[in-house]
Length: 224
Image (tube, rainbow, N blue to C red; front, top):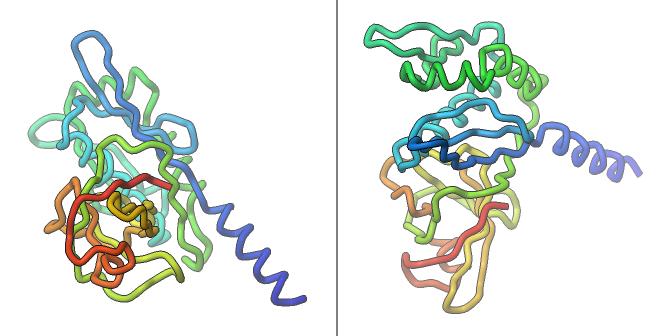
């Protein structure tokens, strides 16, 4: 009975600290932009629709989550001007993102200000750092269609394999499918690895064998 109660409590806690994120492409006039939505609310908008802009969005989210997991005070979040112009978002002396003047004006127009980020930071703070934040991506913006051998250790999270990627937020889960055999596995990003391509997901040799593959190659993936 006690074990059942513990399981229920764990599941409830996991749901409590889960949040959805989605990156949406916008096209207004002659300008493209990417908006970051967290729990169905826009928090940030960056100008551009290329891999560099995309990486900036995910890098910001990963750093934001890292500061939350460290239990840093959300009130220390601030916007400050840079020496070269523009605005940087800083949390606990860590620069999360640098916005251009145009991006600063765009976010002001869309009311994506500091109070909104602070409110979101408070909503995902974790007591004593005891429980990980669960990330669920609603949509992917860039196809990941290749697996790459990585030295991520072990087989973590039970049936879920550890994975690495240059900038996807830690905790992101993907289903990876071998199109030749229709075998699939679930992986979770546990490490950022600059040596892994943006269009690849880094997995270890155990995960590659579980896919029925002998080496790296083309795959199909979906966020879950």
